[in-house]
Structure formats: structure tokens, C-alpha cells
Amino acid sequence: MKRIFLVILVVATFLVTGAIAQTADSQALHTRKKRIAIFDFDYATVQSSSAAVFGTNVDVGKGIADLLVRDLVKDGTYSIIERKAMDKILGEQNFSNSDRANSQSAAKIGKILGVDAIVVGSITQFGNDNKDTKVGGGGGGWGGYGIGGFSHKKSKAVVVVDARLVNIDTAEIMGVATGKGESSRESTSLLGGGGNWHGWGGGAVDFGSSDFQQTIIGEAVNAAVTQMTTELVADNSKLEARTVIVEGLVAAVDGGQVILNIGSKSGLKVGDQLTVQRVTKEIKDPSTGAVIRRMTSPVGVIRLTDVDEISAVGTPVSGSGFKVGDAVKTITQ
Image (tube, rainbow, N blue to C red; front, side):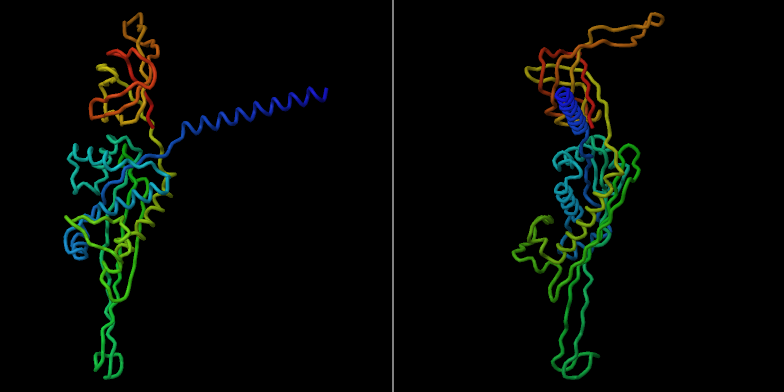
């Protein structure tokens, strides 16, 4: 009797453990990182001061955005839209530099990109806060120069950035983040201390290079972005992963490619998988004649390899015999 009870207990434990593991696996399959797009920061208010630092107009807003992408990718809390995909859409939508801080304009682009939220931001301070302390010499005292007097200069860089996490459906600000960085050294410029720093060309500066980050202004930039990253990560809980139901039709089948009549405007992006189904029967309301239900049978699954605004191209993952008019559907998150 004891042996039978022991066997039952072992089997029950196995079944419960398996059920728990299956539940955990199911939850893991349905959870994902929240996807965001980071726009180049607006730097209009600091353009003159940043130009004074570099001696020419440098897009410091792009540099800040690139560093923020780097830090958030390292952190791993969010899934970040890659730069090439963003640049393509921004070019197609004629998104200008003046729109960088515009939450409403950016939110529209965010829908096309298929993200959960977008990050827009501004640079409010970028430059120096230098102090020149005059030390008296043979004339005595601290009141001015005498024989042997000298000037002791200390360079201090200050960078302040602000970011907003914006809901793409409502353009509502879901969270805010601020970063402030400072760095100072004796007797050198804001671009001093960079070791092998060779400057820049064409108005572009690689903010992620080790040489730039070792300069005074580079250290301040890095500190500001690090603080802003921490606050944006903390805002993750304020976001909800969007669920977008996408439905369309197969418009053409060309060899191993399946072309759809829906694209990025519907929320599709490269890599999405869609189920393909064929309508086998339509059920009509006997009193009105309107179709109230369509019965379908599965044909297969395709993965998208190319997407534009109004169409998409996919290749089969499973199934065969795809035809024009087949229905496609997916739930993309």
C-alpha cells in the first residue's frame, strides 16, 4: 500500500512540475521586450555654444541619441529599432530636424515603425563654465598681478539633456528623464585630454569613440547620457506592449515569394510572421444575406523579408500552395 502511494505521489509531483514548467514556457513565449525608437535630440538652443566648442556646427543631437541607443542596448530592458530602418522611414516621411522635439509628429512615425513608444529629447546645456583665478606674485596679496604673477585656468564642461517617453497612439508623455554631466580639468580646453583625439570631419563627431569620451566635454556627455538612461529604464513599467492585429490578403505569388496587400502602414515590419488561411465557406445571415462568418483552413506561415508602406514580401516558413486571395493574419507585439 505504501509503495502504491509513493508511486502516485511521484507521478503527481511530475505532472505538477511539468504543468508549472509548461506555464512558465508559455508565459515566456508571450512576453517580450517593449520596443522603442529613439529620435535625434533637438539641439537648437545649444547650437551656438556647441559650435563654439567644436569650431563648427556639429549635430550633437544625433551624437546624444547614438549614445543613448548604445546604453539602452547594453542594458537590455528595451528592444531598440535600428538606425537604418529609422532613417529610411524618416526620409520617406520628410521628417525634418525641426520635428525632433515634436511629440505628435514623432508619434506618427512611431506607428509606422511598429514600436510601443518613442523617445524624443532636447539638449538644454552644452558647453563650458570656465573659471580664471588670478594669483598675485611679488606685489603681495591676492588682489592682482605683481612681479611673477600668473593666471590659473580651470576648464569645466556641463551637459544637460532631457528626454520624453511618448505613447504613439495618444502622443501622451508616459515618462521623463533628465541627465546632467560635469567634468573639469586644469589648464586645458574642453576638447583636451583626449589622448589620440584627432578631431572630426564634415561636421560629424563620433561621440562613442574612446578618444572623444576622454575629453572634458566627452566625459560630461557620457555622464549625462548615463543618468538619462537609468531614468528611462526606470520608466519601463509605465509602458504597455502594444498588440496590433494585422489582416490582409495575398496579392501575388512569385516563385518562392508571397506578396501581400498590406505593409508598414498597417504595422508590419521585416521579420514578422503571418499565418495564411484559405476561406473554404462563407456563412450568411438568412434574413439579410450578409456574410456573418468565414470558415477557413490553414495553408501555412510566412516570414516577411521586405516591407514598404502598402505592401510586403514574405517567404514560406511552413506550408505550400499559397494562392492569390488567401487571407493573412498575425498578432504582432
